[in-house]
Image 1 (cartoon, rainbow, N blue to C red):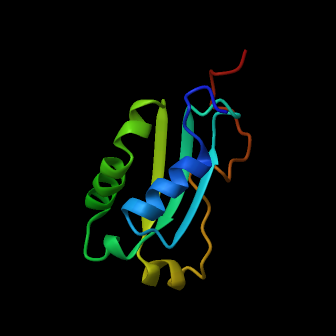
Image 2: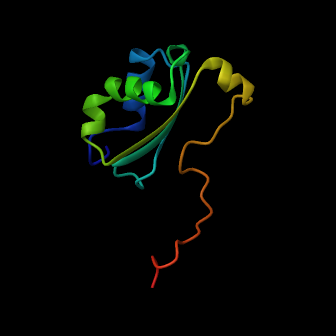
Length: 106
């Protein structure tokens, strides 16, 4: 189990239950210790909501889990938005090139 006690499966189950998520893709970005997650969440509850309102809805559903981790980065879509994208998107942080920011590597 992840050090934080938070798992990808647990986050997904909570989102399906509390925000009626139709699709959830979660990735542990912390290398398995359960401290940083990125997510793609598709729910009809996001309709007519701003990005901020969508994030607040998700954060309220995951209040306990978010309190136990270091970083949480969701991308929220309505089913219609998800369909327009062809049902594909990459969770935040998943498509990295391995580039190093100047001054961070000696």
